Amino acid sequence: MRIALTGAKGWVGQRLYADLERQHEVVALVGDVRRADTFVVARGFDVLLHLASPMPWDFKERFSESVEVSLTGMHLALEACVRYGASLVFASTSGVYTRGLLGAVGEHDDLIRPPELYGQSKWLAEQICRLYHQSRSIPVRILRLFNLYGPGQTERLLIGYLLRQVCQKGVIELHHPHDRRDFIHVHDVVRAFAASATRPFSGLQTINIGSSQAWSVLDVVRFAERMVAYPLDVRLPEQGAMSHESVYADITAARHLLDWQPEITLVAGLADCLGVANPEVLSETAKLV
Image (cartoon, rainbow, N blue to C red; front, side):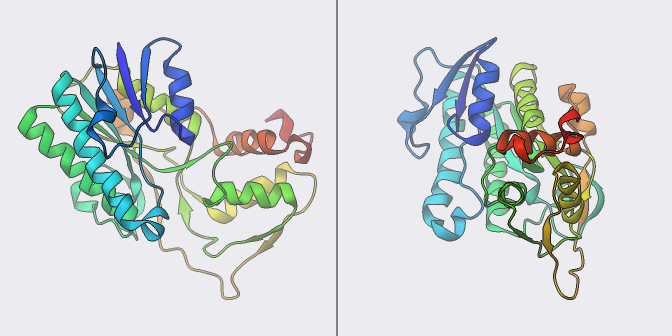
């Protein structure tokens, strides 16, 4: 199988490329995804994993460029799939779902109301996938990723920020400590993409990728605190922020279509992150996790 990959230099993409190349021929498409020639590949490919994407904050800092990367990139990726007779796997987000949900979230259109620009762009890209599936019969798998974390994550995201503050013994400021989120380790996300690329399929499939558990932001901090040999300086809002959501992924589709389920628990994942960031901060007990 010949697999093409955009975003191969990104945080997830580097890991995915390394994982896939052990058993498959992988072509990294490293050019500007707004240019059609980025997707021109000698001998073509069988499946395209489209991970190249702006980050959520890019829509505030570089709006026009981010829209172009998201939507023009999606269009050109699908045109390449038409040209080579390939299928497509698209990295979307749980951010397409509305806020204020409770419990398990399935892949239902009536739950779609993305509150942020990032989620809105992903939803528009999903619609382009649907257009190409309907008009050009391109097989498409859309993976809606919940809250990714893992070693080396940017400090602009929650667990990346937490790791920095823990390792530096800095103040940890929590604005929404009781929000409950579904955290999924990057190792398991890579496994999901690999399964999506290598398991044959037809049609259009939308699949949630998460841990199927919800933990509060404060839970994450307390787990980390138990792993280090010193107390953490945690600052909570004066009035105590109320949670506006408590959701986790219904991963029934992932189990059925990909034969996938997460392997790494949140506690083990946090220990992994801290051990990579600075193993000296871990207590002896945490090193056994």
